[in-house]
Image 1 (spheres, one colour):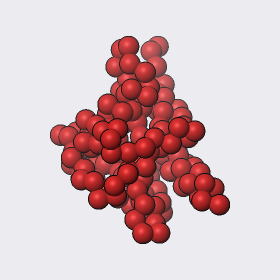
Image 2: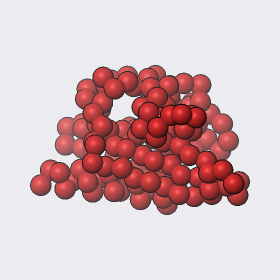
Image 3: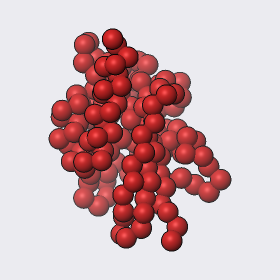
Amino acid sequence: MAELRAAGLIIFRRMAAEIEYLLMQTSYGIHHWTPPKGHVDPGESDRETALRETHEEAGLGTEHFKVIEDFKHELRYSVNGKPKTVIYWMAELLEPKTPITMSNEHQDYKWLPLSEACELVGYPDLIKALKECDKYLKQQEQ
């Protein structure tokens, strides 16, 4: 059975003393909220997918953010009985007021502090990923 594979970026910005995370609401299915991500195309690396999907879904190119090279989080779960792996890197938006340009795959987006972001996503594995990002960022500040 072929494994489903996706990759994306957990994008954050610093607003005053607060860190906010970008979440996008899908325009399909149950309209769940996630960071920008998508399926890995044949011949594409996970990293290439994460960058491409972020550009396609949020209008953010590599000139808009800095990828945190030493942070990578892997989620594994099942979708319709098939195993799926999602790889997330973390990236900081360089200019906090950079506009988001949504694709037709999404109907809304929000910048939220950790607690509100965790409440909105609802999925325990994604909540864990967001909390690990936040923990990493707080450790870097010490």
